[in-house]
Every structure is written in C-alpha cells, then in structure tokens.
Length: 255
Image (tube, rainbow, N blue to C red; front, side, top):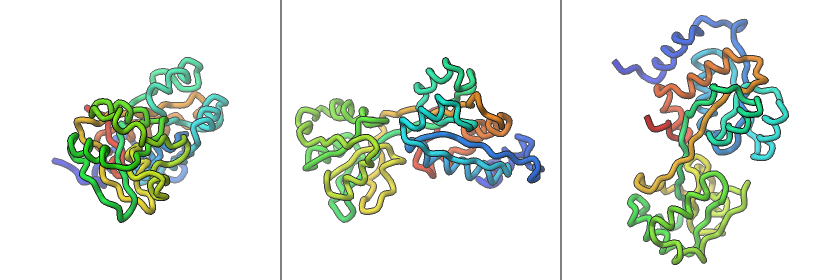
C-alpha cells in the first residue's frame, strides 16, 4: 500500500528510531552548499526536521567561500556538492571516505521576460526554432552552463547563433539578465532560473536533449553530530522523499 507523503515521513522516522526523540535527544546539524543545490536541500531539510525533530542549518556559500569553508575545517556536518568535486576533499581527509552518495541530478531550463512571447520548447525541433528566432540567448559557463554549447551543437545551430549568445558572468543569475531585457531568452539550471520576478519559466529542456550534473552529499570529518548527519543523508537519498526534491525543482537520481 502506498503511504501519503506525511505517512512516508513518519515511517522513515520510525525506521531511524527517532519518533520518540524528545528535545534532549534532538541534534542540530549544518550542511554547506552553494546556490546549485540550495532549493532542494532546503525542502529536504524541512521534511527531515518535521520527521525527526532534528534541526538542519542550511549554510549557503558562494563557490570560493564554500571551498574555503570545507578546506579550513569550518564547523559543519555535511557538504552538498557536484559529485566530482568531492574527490579532492576525500583525498585530503576533509570528507569521510565512503560517505558520499548521489541524491539529485540537475538539468537546465528556459525562461523569458514576463509578458514576452512564449516560444514552444517542448521538442528538439521546437527548441531549435526558438533558439534560431531569439534575438539574444543568455547562459553562464559555470555549473551546468557548459552543457549549452554542446546542446547547440547537437541541434546543429551553434554556428548560426553563436554571435547572439551572451555569456552571463558567474555569480549573476541568468534570470536577472532576462528580467532586465539584456537577453531575450535565458537558459540555466532548472532550480536556479526559477522562480524570478519579471520572468516566466517555459520549462525544462526536452528529455531527449537534457544533460544532467549529479549532486552528492558527504559527511565532513569535523562533524560533531555524525549520527544525525548520517540520518539526514539517508533521508536525502531515500526515493520516498523524491517529491521534496522536485518541490525544489531538482530531480532524484536515475534508478
């Protein structure tokens, strides 16, 4: 029998042995991350807090600051990163070996200025036409940004549109450039490009063209609350909690 979402959370809490935890048993943990995974982790953290009584501090840092926090051993319990970024931290002993698990995947979506024409992007051919018809296209070259060059090459239109592509600097939201009218159409990670005032989200890229980055979570060696931190890892990776990820416009791993 399929349980409703609230029932699934309660069942998970029982499995973790935490349903009877009182204030004295609750723990407070901190997870380091950047903008790339913040939306989904915040939703998962809220669900975990409701199910267990533990507190999760979501500490969002810009890229360089995030790397410095982890490298310096700043107090925290977990880190959420693109999977490949964990390698050096595991080798240096900053992240516990064997603790890293994939919990989400990150693809790109498309937005236009509010009130502007809303082109169809639902199929590869429709997306191709939308890109050819746009007066300007904005994307970044960080995170999932480099995927777009390959996308345009796969569509066979890169040479035709390269002169109207505007690379948005790292740290600047593509949606902000769309809202200001700096670019007609913007492409960025689905959970970063939306929602944003002054824009309308057209949706994700067609499934046939979607390329994903893979997000993982790992236990920091400096953690003082490893039991609760490991419980949150289990919660983040449990397929029963995929709806929370999707609420944050992220996708669970392909199983």
